Length: 436
Image 1 (cartoon, one colour):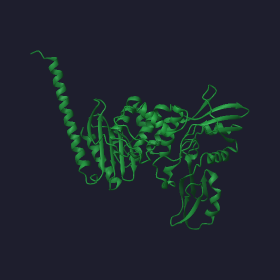
Image 2 (cartoon, one colour):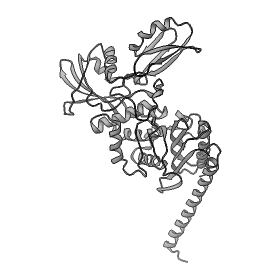
Image 3 (cartoon, one colour):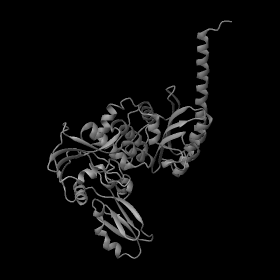
Image 4 (cartoon, one colour):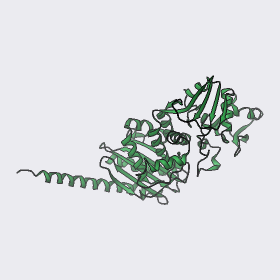
């Protein structure tokens, strides 16, 4: 009997449809069992989206079009922008050589400048060779602190202030082994006498709105702490640069037009900073990355203007228009849907190589998921998010059958420990990886 090709195609489509429906039902069953009926999740707001990029079909959605506070999942959007617009290497400075050792310099918000994570410092080497540096602040159009940040965390290392030219990550690193030490050394002398006269344990705190650091008695022995310094416009930057460069820097207020004689000075490979940003969930690197994108695309640094531009261009096709206000996710004003994260991860996959993505994102047993997915290294690449009572995880998983899926799980307003929420999400995602 002669087989009808049309019937064969129809039969194949029918089998595929049945299989797809079966997978969707199984994932829904797992979600209900591991998350939706889990007592730890019951008081919380939960959103889940799982997408198959090979068929361009959602396999599961639960409140996936609703908005959630995403915490550090916001960094996925900043990372996408940086991967797309910062090129292979970070622009540390633009400068015009005026002759006789005088240079006009425009900073680019490079977070790696004098940062301890980066031993190679091309910008510092260049600036040391100059006789006089005219540093313009005309391209800085932003505020040191982001909208919706928790102001009373100002002594915490994760709340370093944003600036046009970061130095040492905009934090002071205090330490005491045999001798008391501060980096930058500019902040050391005011505390040396107090430390020398202290016999017991102590802690160091900074006063709000100033760079006055004080010692406070503590039952614990002091070893080390990183505290953000108060940037106070650009005056502290000027003092720190002159302390490092021996009074070569003057602050000016004219725009350096981007004419042919303007030279770009590069610092680090872009992905070397993005990898640290994602693996450590570094808020400062994320904020400065978005500012660097702004300086490249708009000619000045402003987070809000850059976000607005991205949402009207590259990200105009997001399933739901998010409320996106900062680069790091520190702000509780941020609102994104699970489908928005599936969309940005799909864009990454379509626009960048898989090798690049997997080098930047953390996998099981590494980075901020070092305690989770330990047996799934190479099968999950994701970004975590965590604020008090909010947990998020979005990324890529590869199932036992070799199918790659894109997922986002956002949990807001939980009342249990973050560990319980993370374990519930882990149980769900590993079940999907193991069974499909």
